[in-house]
Image 1 (cartoon, rainbow, N blue to C red):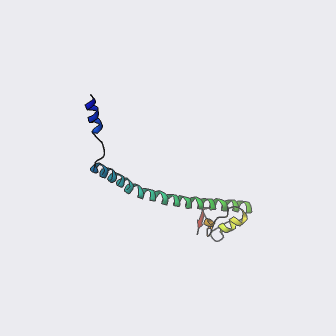
Image 2 (cartoon, rainbow, N blue to C red):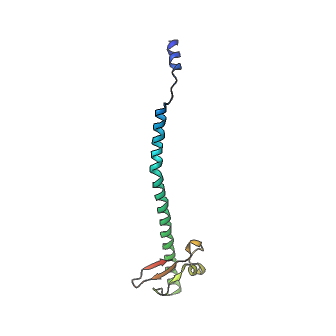
Image 3 (tube, rainbow, N blue to C red):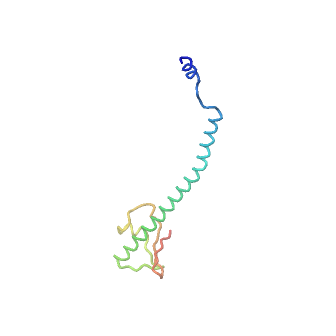
Length: 112
């Protein structure tokens, strides 16, 4: 019995080089697959942020139009800077350069 315990204790277990290489290859594949996916998520987040900003500017322009009783059209739009100055938008550098107009169908568009 004592000899069997000694034999079991003498057997040292470990990973072989092949097993370690296999794990490294699998981890490499996981990283290779996940990096482009993460890049797409970041790009989509930027696009969604820009879309949300435009919607916010359009909403502010609609409130401005209703409260000031000003009619926006293709030729007379309102700039994001004016909306910020009037208090309809929070002052942010990202809003700079947008102009909101309304077409004949009543659709609002914000352009840079």
